[in-house]
Length: 265
Image (cartoon, helix red, strand yellow):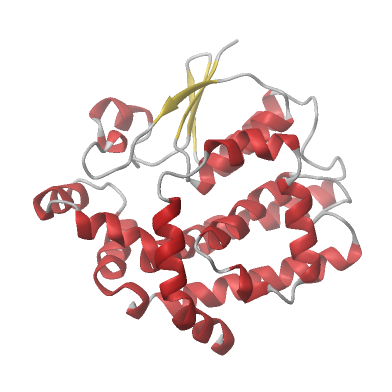
């Protein structure tokens, strides 16, 4: 049995798959996809054969290709049922899927908007304009391309940013409220719901935004408990982040404007 994971360090989608693999005790071979403007592994023709959207992660299990992080998480549960991360009860499993569905319903797109506007646009601003133009011209994802071009140009003044910030204010408050009933989001067990949400909390925290939810004590406790799990350390923390210093510097600069949006949401 072989598992290959195409991924990179700071991808929230890749982080949650690495976390699920760690929780299930599965060994895997990594294929690191460098997404910088100067290399662009995700647009390599060979990778696009595996993942026509040109995104990560992609899982290959004994030659079978599985794409899309939520699909991969469910696939791992079906293929490797030991150490389950889904509730057994059908209703509780449906509740879990309502949480994971939030990602595809807008959370992931809004997360990219927040990241690009606050900090990640620096990569496009520092790169050769011709390379940047080629990168976006060849990007298969039309929505991602259009949003990036707006967000890279306007930063925290992007018209897309206030709604994206509002998405996370609503989401984080919902997480905090749900945790009043137990330690975890669903069925009093650590599940795919927790895995899917926690990576977004820590993505925003990496941009120095954590003071925004300083009053959400249950969310902060839940996040700290997950980050203390050995599996989180090996799957997320130990991978580090090649842009961490820029995230800190630019996040601190952006915080006052983002806080105003949070307060107004």
